[in-house]
Length: 180
Image (cartoon, rainbow, N blue to C red; front, top):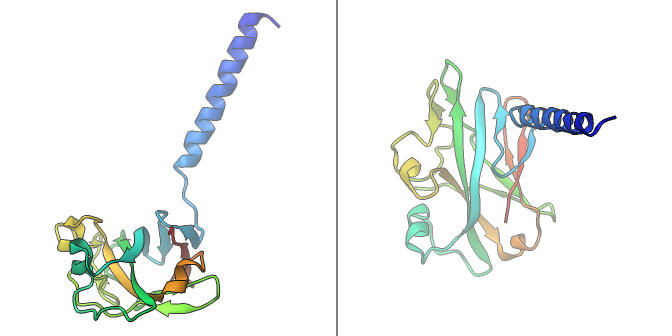
């Protein structure tokens, strides 16, 4: 094989590999087990955990997420999971009524009610072709651009990773491994 033929063959091989890689990037998975930052389809709604972290009531930003919450008791901390939810159907859809987090010790914690303007409206409706948070709303314009679900976790939860968020859906729950 001549040097030109090898160069041409190598170039064509590289071109095919790049094309296949780019094609794969556009594909979506039907998996109900994802990591933070990957959307998951549940019925007609697409949930995406955009960020999660422990919240500090002494921080100006975090105090807005924790409106109406008492000081966390000793040995506990508040944890926020920030989500975007898309409804791409032609009909209004209902959000999950609750979310849970399970740690590596199989302890389960349920989201707590919140009075914050940033709160995820559990059980609320997402209009056709709309999203939560609603465009131009306080949570959508906020620093994280997501609606928050708040959990009260024991301090040991940060050591008992991974933390797994469970989102109920019509075809069974989805799980999201949270990035701590």
